[in-house]
Length: 124
Image 1 (spheres, one colour):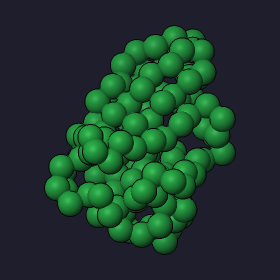
Image 2: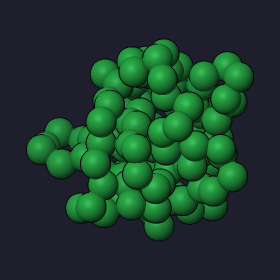
Image 3: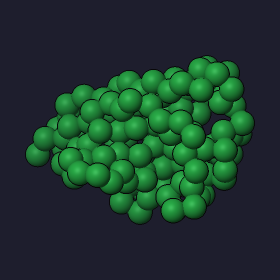
Image 4: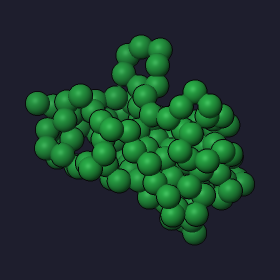
């Protein structure tokens, strides 16, 4: 499985962006998620979605502002980000896990695949 993100950019606070992650290979059985990373060693969990797309989960910091979705036929996972704030500035990564999506934000998650990331910068 290969993952390629796009859709990042520079936006003013209060604005919106939609990130896309195109997957190739046998990804349809995988739960998918979005993570982000600011300068430093740790990646922060943002959102997760089940293989069918029927279950979604969010970090508290983005709940109500971000929406994760997937188009199985187009092999694409999306992250709609609304009301962006400067603290959302980060490199955003797409990830795939064979386990349930609710584990993505925990130490129990097993991430098999990562994309290379797309930069999101929010100005104040």
